[in-house]
Amino acid sequence: MRRAAAAATARTRIGMAAEEVRQASAAATAAEAASASVPAPAGSRWARVWPSALRWIPTSTERIIAAEKRLLSILKTGYVQEQVNIGSAPPGSKVKWFRSSSDEPRFINTVTFDSKENAPTLVMVHGYGASQGFFFRNFDALASRFRVIAIDQLGWGGSSRPDFDCRSTEETEAWFIDSFEEWRKAKNLSNFILLGHSFGGYVAAKYALQHPEHVQHLILVGSAGFSSETDHSSEWLTKFRATWKGMLVNHLWESNFTPQRIVRGLGPWGPDLVRRYTTARFGSHSTGELLTENESSLLTDYIYHTLAAKASGELCLKHIFSLGAFARKPLLHSASDWKVPTTFIYGHDDWMNYQGAQQARKDMKVPCEIIRVPQGGHFVFIDNPAGFHSAIFYACRKFLSGDAGEGLSLPDGLISA
Image (cartoon, rainbow, N blue to C red; front, side, top):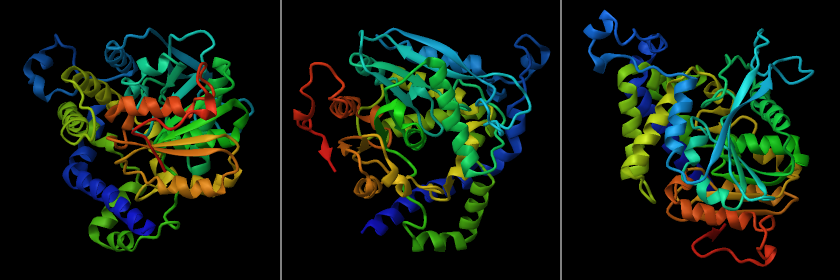
């Protein structure tokens, strides 16, 4: 049964990838270089002649931060945005996490929300292809109980985007883990609750394995990276790889062809592609609370600028996962080394398989809970924010003043797995 579920998940993942490749890969590859060019000034003769609908849409760190501010302007809670300097490399490192000959300092884009005195600290880490602004529906509610700090991982969002030249899974993991640790030092943080979504869950878990002394509790939301292809052998996947479509998709995967390249390659049509995705995923195909028109517009603008910017952290994909999003160094194999109490949270309709967490729990020697939230998919915190917040408050009940701690029962609607 578990293998059947894994095969179905793999078919979904690869089917989506194949469709993306079929529709857009040729155009994206041919046009991507042009998307990085700087458009002519608005007042130039070229700008007057060239139709506005065909002009490349520029982006930059400044535009990402501006889009972030517009998105977060709908919040009621005050916050401080800062670029935290993490230096040019981890002290004493022989291989810089970005393999750069430059000593230029790097920065992690960080937002810290106003909170009550002595509130526990909650650090939030986004997933692949996302940025901290994806949690925009959660900041107000979470800031009422926590000191919330959200970051853009190195190479994503409004953070620095160094050239990505990692050559192995180990170097790629170090890129994210070491840069996060330098950020933690710069912020002088310790004893915090660490939350990671999807690929951010993978990074958060790997960080907690290396630096358990700093993490009070680990919350993994729809976490990627628990199982490998060998753990869930799929006859269908093997057959698919033998087809011409499978060989093409696998070649593009191993060549680090990312979804972001499609957005860049489409140039002036990139924003419309993102709008269609946002409207479909958080609208017609949503399993929960739909975005308002204003939320959808602001989120679309934000997503476009974060995806169209220089390729950097996104290029981790082939080093961390094989085709089908199976981890090359799965967390399941490290479950017995877990030192931090952990709560797994999954949307009821999440395409990430919660059975991987159940399998890991069998080998863990620390407290572990698995919670499923109804009316939510992989982006459960957007689909069902109220249910998600309820799960977070329950997971952190022992850290929140005024709660009865372990005596609390699971809130209505949530499912223990």
